[in-house]
Length: 224
Image 1: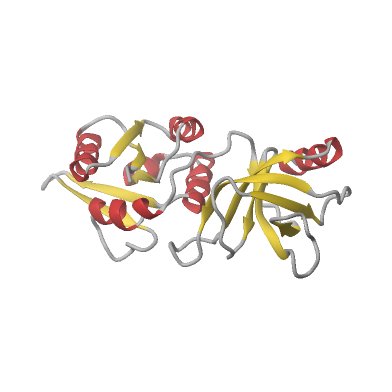
Image 2: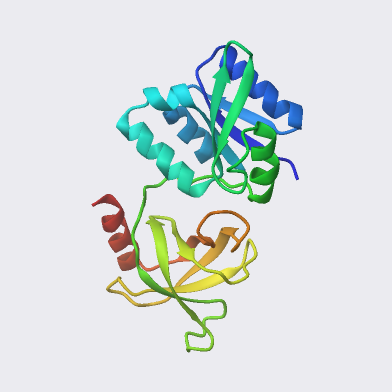
């Protein structure tokens, strides 16, 4: 599987060293000089992970740091440090390769296991709706699962689930916190399987059939 990662780092010797380390492994890397540029990359392309230069992180504003945390929750992430005296690169990894300090371990042990995907361009907030989901539209106890959303945007949500899902699967959702309890239909756009990474397992769902009232209420929740 081809691996594509996004890197945020100012132009210079460190960036060139990071790019070389990634390309040596055979992975693709896109670069950004700021976290706003990084966010744009993720909105336009699908990635298996994100790499952040430690100096760039330390210089970031609080809003940019919030963005870093948001990406950390969604993607495998590595913090990079360039040793100017030796010309070496250290990779402080989060997840399965947490004991390793190499770019190669981050790419092979985390990014290759994580399905490439973009982030939502619309606002995403940590909203915890009690939810009932069903693959068939059967909301009986036997035909459905009681769970919770981990975040919600105007276009979809991430739902905690340890069940087996495939990209493209259809799902019916009842969000118990909405006034309108009509089931919302959606499509699974990405998924995190239980036990594969040190992340919350679940499915990223794009809303397909949602009432005007439900959409308006979700928009209000996301912007409040």
